[in-house]
Amino acid sequence: MTTLHHIEASELHARRERVFLVLAGLFLGSMTMLNILGISRFIDLSFEFLGMTIPMSLAIGVLPYPVTFLCTDFISELYGQKRANNLVWVGLILNVWVVGFLWLGGILPPEVELDTSTGLPPTDAYDYAFFKIRFLTMGAVFASMVAYLTAQLCDVTLFHYWKRLTKGKHLWLRNNGSTVVSQFVDSFAVITITHFYARGLPIDPEAAVWPQLWVFIASGYVFKLVIALVDTVPFYIGVHYLGRYLEVDPNAEHAAGEV
Image (tube, rainbow, N blue to C red; front, side, top):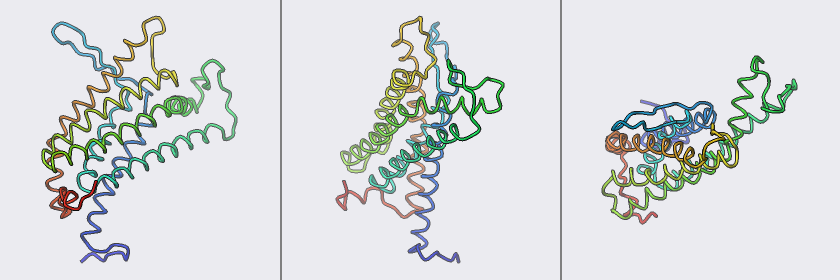
């Protein structure tokens, strides 16, 4: 028999905290990854449809982002809205923490000679890679934080709005309904702020700005939307088995009057 730590009230309590730790770890790890990778590279996923070329340019930082919404949906469903919101705020603090160390790493000795036009050291310098990542991350971090906080709180709020409205029924509706709206909020905010505030997007200065921005916004949104629809089945399966494993009734909050 496993010996419980004195802080663990029971084996069931310990099990619930371990699952929460895994979900929170995936959420925070994905947040850290996307914040650092961010706009360091854009992937061209353009495709042909009815004889037309549909442009699709994705920032590599978008790839782990859908995982964060799936994790907050699991936590919202199994642990409640308050704990999900708390995790969102911890994620924001983690973003500040990461950026703080990127800033600190750039000002500590030895002093690096930076090109006045690019703000970066020579491309053959040993620490060029660090300063390039630092430049891109610091440039887009404000956009990332505003978009992240707005979208995640929107996701959690809408998830529980649909849950209350349907009295805990139609799991697919709150999973997709919350994510569809919040993903658009995120995609629009991060692209527009990154461009107008940080000037961090590969925009052609000779062409109209908004058509280019809409390509980035639509590309990120379509990718996130497809992933959100695909993860509906895993979400159903996960809630079913985790609910039994954790001995949690996701609808009990309604009986308790939680809002």
